[in-house]
Amino acid sequence: MGAPASTGAKVKPQRSTSLGKTGGSSVKQKLLEWCRQKTRGYQHVDIQNFSSSWNDGMAFCALVHKFFPDSFDYTSLAPKNRRLNFELAFSTAE
Image (tube, rainbow, N blue to C red; front, side):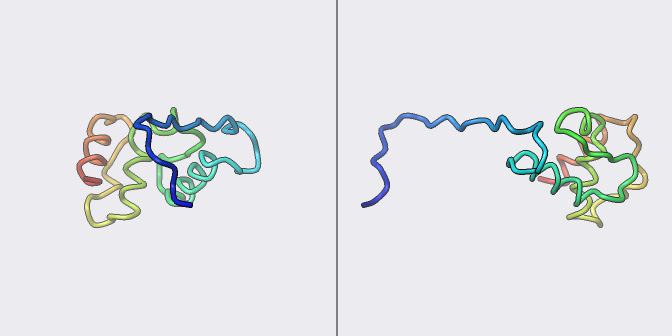
């Protein structure tokens, strides 16, 4: 048997409801932990969630810097420069 025939209907992904549960069993929790591991040791970064932990752009910059360390000087960044941080992270990630 092959894959079911496409009916043209879009499949809506289901959202995980286990974000707040302990144990890290949900995809969101695993992704959050991966982000914590990759940004461990970066100044001004304390990833606890997918909202306020990212609001100044520092966590995103740290994550990008982890993979592209020669692209910019992370130590020159400051949390108060939100717009610059996001612009830098997005332009580097592209």
